[in-house]
Length: 153
Image 1: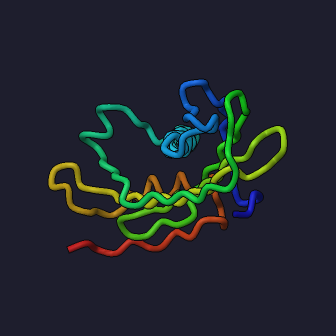
Image 2 (image 1 turned 45 degrees about the vertical axis):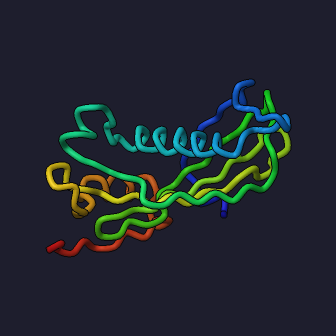
């Protein structure tokens, strides 16, 4: 992943309870780290996330979540989670991310997560709203492929 394409990042420190019996961050914890990055990204672009909006105005579900583990992280490491939306299709969008160890700039893990926008009443895929597309476009510019929506039947 090209670092120059990422316009958002957040830092976190590895905590003692995130370590497994090998003394490294447990593989499942990276899912949480990437989610922290995605939520911070959405906050940065002004997409309100709370119990009212998620259940009534919009519903977005995770359809695919891939992680490539590159190097281990350990207790006390400061990690930077980079996040971006690289593609918006009709009813789905793709988050990409990577985690970098601050002290060495080593890539710890990479992530691709596909989300699908659902109608909260029917739970059926629906078009990603124009307002969301525009907020992403403001941050990502030409670094995000945003397809024109089509009618979902």
